[in-house]
Image (tube, rainbow over all chains, first blue to last red):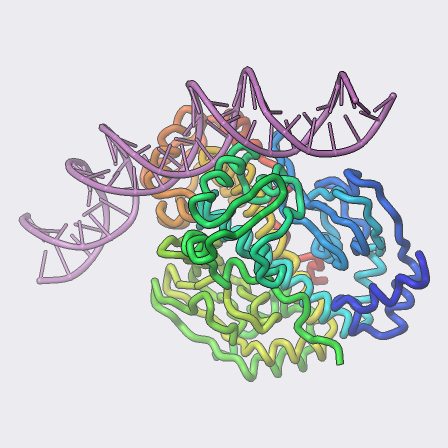
Length: 239
Length: 239
DNA sequence: TTGCCCGCTTGATTATTATCAAATGGTGAG
DNA sequence: CTCACCATTTGATAATAATCAAGCGGGCAA
């Protein structure tokens, strides 16, 4: 692992508060690796051996059952993923694959657990990270159970726009079929939902999204902070 | 809070490993309370002030959006709930109400966070508890996204049966309309699904469930450990 | 015991979403 | 530059689940 990558990892909320010693020890047993696009990193059912930290690129988390597949989330840098499986020393409930060429730091799960036990500040940061993940998943489940497909798409567009600082236009960050799967519908249904939302304040041509009538879109999406707001990365900003 | 209740709480995985001192301090600032059935304990959106520990009774966790409601989970004693909101010092994403008369220990969230920071063993137990909750929610989301209503019902019956030690017959632990909501469907749809499953190995008359053809039911439900297995309460059994 | 309330069921219909099949169109390899 | 591939779109149809309305029936209070 490259020496100059350590500061970037160190700045992550998960690693920021821990002692220099714990951090050094963890980094010494970890290694970074580059992966090409569309590579499977691990599969659901395997035992969780490494905490993954995405340094650059994009990773998709998905699950399968009886030939059906659903995208559970998309990871953007810099963030750690599948920490819960590592903490529990259990099997992955999701599979991961790169979407773009990605650089990932792999931290052995048992060293991770050991460091948490030794370093209370690290334990607190890990706890917060886990609580964050839990709440993200609660929001996802609520979204699925309380909204229909059109409403989910509308809310997703609004969220994405807000995330980008309120931009009225943006480019889809993933393929439509993956977005569809994340929203819990088929690609065909997404295509039809997109078309039907032209009357409701969003226009999507190819990968170009344009919010043409924010009020109308908002009325349809019914944005709710308890479903749509991002979980802050960080409860204890540095300094 | 009654002195004789402490040992029961102390035996919980969450509280078992912590120091006697931390436990005593926490218990001193906590109090237990009895609630009648169908009482709202807290509502989504409120700031999380107390970790709740259900000592006896039953509590339902549900969420609402735009007049729609969905049951996110049902808590059975003895277990703690909404720990993530307390850790993050955030708003509840779910509301809670008692289903039966319930006794609940309320632990102030800030004392909780303080104790975690001071007691590494407690922090580890809390981390495990949170990871458990996360994985339960991942399973719930997978269930919703990968299975249709009939399959979810079939899998639920099978899970419940397994949980009861492989019983071929049992009594529904909650009202059907709540089960329906948990499964993400309407009460009417549940009623029809129940009827249609008579051909597939389950008979439900009133609250009486009977598995008449386990093989057939299993074939339909397609039970999967990565969706249906319980998350163990406990990674570190006592002794 | 009677009557009422409420959860559940059933029926009819509609809404929503999936499936299957066939175009369309953009992109990258050769 | 052209072709082939693959994501996307569109169309037709079927499956799935929701909605609205009415009836059933068990439990509980008066």
